[in-house]
Length: 439
Ligand code: HEC
Ligand code: HEC
Ligand code: HEC
Ligand code: HEC
Image (cartoon, rainbow, N blue to C red; front, side):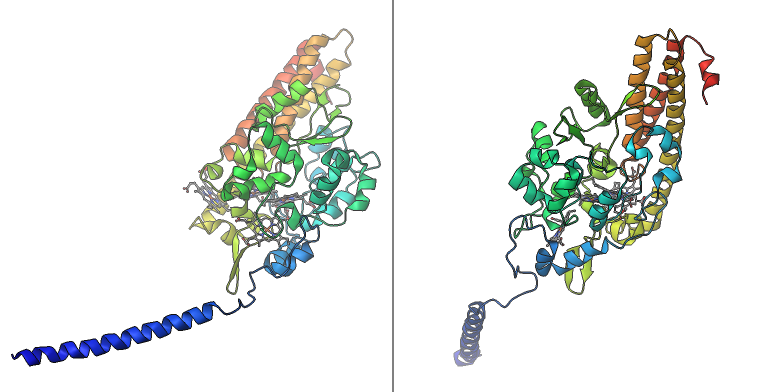
């Protein structure tokens, strides 16, 4: 091979390299030109500035039509499931023991299965539990008008305003402003009572992870609470902790009662809807890092858009979406829900029977001349605690699914305390024949 022959290909390579450099420069030029063009309007970019705390979800919905339209669907959901769903079935008709257990309290008159978020305002206004003496506090978890009202008038004023008067300022059901900060769309704590409860536990939600917020945002409403003092100040009983024993201890110390049980003289407590407390009491899912929104607001597709379904309802109505993102065998886990709920329901009814026996023994003892008042008072304490523990699971809306072991443990403890109350009532009366006298 000659020297010239070796030189020829290297010359061709130089020409090729030159062409590539020119093409690359042209491409960079085109890209720079495109990048400096004005941004076209894209569906996901905010097209309308939302006023901070704007109560009207329709305004937010202009920017986020998928989230808005799925939220609207919660209005028309009406399918029941075995123990939940969205049909407003009367719990009192389904289980008449409740009429006895809540005697002397409005829950014995009207108590329905809950429905979707868009119905919150209609339902709170329709319930027979509400009357002229009702506190404004009852609106606390029903409306997207609240965050603005709380910031303008303060929660103390909000709570002490009578229900009917406060109602004039409230026109929206639950909406975007209950869970999101306008424009950033960050999840936020909007209920001052939750802010205060977390603070009392030394916690600041602003430091929480996004996954934690996907649970905590529900604690704006799905929690145990009570109305403290004359001003009916919305308060979460979390100072000692969020486990049932810590909550019962808190109430015992504060001496708070919701009502007095007729005939037994027991100061009673009513549990609200402690989904957050039961779920976070070391449930398997919570410990595995699963959030409320994972099951109740699964990601959904609408063409190319992927978004969180805001059609919050029973996951059993759409288990493929709710469970299928993590579990491969959906029928298997749905079957587990049925088994768990049947077991919890069975133990729940056993606790109710024990409570009713305790109530009857207490009533008979209280009517006996010469009853041992100190013993009777001890029996009343056990009655109150047993009912609160039962109610913590009965008023919680998952029939134990959110935390099966804890639900069964609490119901076992409730039954035990109720039977102890019954025995103590007999001892206080000093007469076992009161057991036979009970109706
Ligand atoms: C692992 C999935 C999962 C997680 C996580 C979860 N839930 Fe549930 N939830 C369920 C199932 C299943 C039911 C039972 C539904 C039924 O009986 O129809 C339920 C029931 C409910 C209900 C009653 C629904 C109805 O139709 O009556 C409410 C309210 C609720 N959950 C709120 C919450 C909140 C708040 C959290 C977080 C603190 C949470 N859930 C976490 C699966 C979950
Ligand atoms: C009950 C609480 C709640 C309400 C009410 C609510 N959201 Fe959400 N929203 C959430 C949660 C939880 C997520 C999931 C956030 C995450 O994963 O970071 C979310 C996510 C979003 C996102 C982020 C994208 C996505 O879909 O995951 C947007 C945007 C959004 N919501 C818009 C809205 C709009 C608009 C409204 C009112 C029409 C609204 N939301 C009402 C709780 C709520
Ligand atoms: C602003 C208060 C509020 C917030 C925040 C809130 N909820 Fe609710 N939720 C309610 C009320 C009130 C109802 C019952 C409405 C009715 O019965 O009319 C309800 C009902 C439900 C139901 C039952 C729906 C049905 O069709 O039976 C589920 C499930 C539920 N919420 C889950 C959640 C989850 C999960 C979160 C957090 C992502 C959340 N909620 C946040 C107040 C709230
Ligand atoms: C975000 C992921 C996720 C979602 C959504 C989810 N799960 Fe799970 N689930 C888990 C993890 C993680 C475990 C822990 C055990 C494991 O690794 O399988 C678990 C465990 C379980 C168990 C066994 C519980 C126990 O105590 O051993 C059941 C039953 C179950 N899930 C049912 C459901 C049902 C029903 C749904 C839908 C309503 C659901 N899960 C939704 C992640 C999820």
